[in-house]
Length: 305
Image (cartoon, rainbow, N blue to C red; front, top):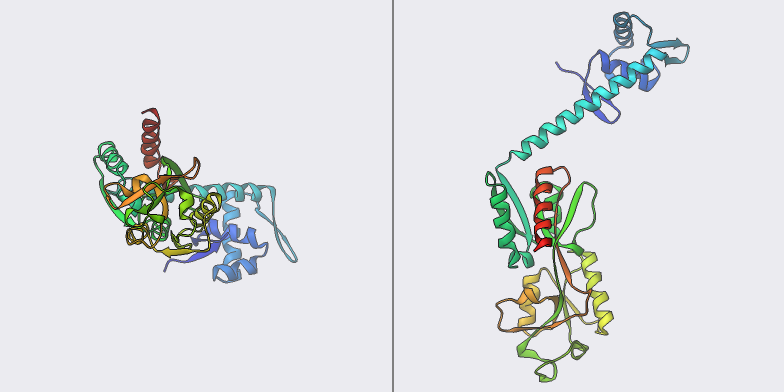
């Protein structure tokens, strides 16, 4: 039966070298034997055999335990480096396997899903990585963030303000959309033909609920305050699709971009001041070097256009 031990928070297959590291870590053969689930005499014998093989004592035996000799300290250092390299080898094997994965799962929030830039990005990735099949998944902000962290999607296309910075992931802005106040032509405040945003001071604002993205929710509140609009009359919904549906029904206005209402004859837009727009970003695992190269090249291509 294969035996294992826990060392430095990791699980390793038990063996003479690991026995040595456990004794060095505990500074006591009895305590090390207990952690290895073997008897103290058996562990003492293993250490003695190892020292005989090397030809030098690795520990100084004392009444209350053991301490490493100079040779023991060097042996401990080298063994830890070897174990670290072993962990890296396992990680690299996993990454290599992922790189060969035939599917590239792309998560898109509903605003990106209907944006005209998506077909261009899709075509670029399809041509740059023809061996991979691209699969699009429509997600809300919470789902997309969770799926990316759990590895269910490889690439997450979302709003910059909806992604909370997380170690191990890279983010790249793909495009910037100027902000706009979106309203329905059927429910113009005061029936004005060309209203300005001040005309919506007493109208309810439709926002995606805070739990979907606290940062984006706060960004919207800041915009309302900057425009002098009422932040107390707010109705929250689950996603952008519902947000636009509510606006079409005349239940209020929302803050998006002009591109969000392409093809809609019922909705109108009023440009917001500079700096109150939305940026669409790509987020992906830092370890996916192939995807990093592709997205860096795509970004540079877009910048040069």
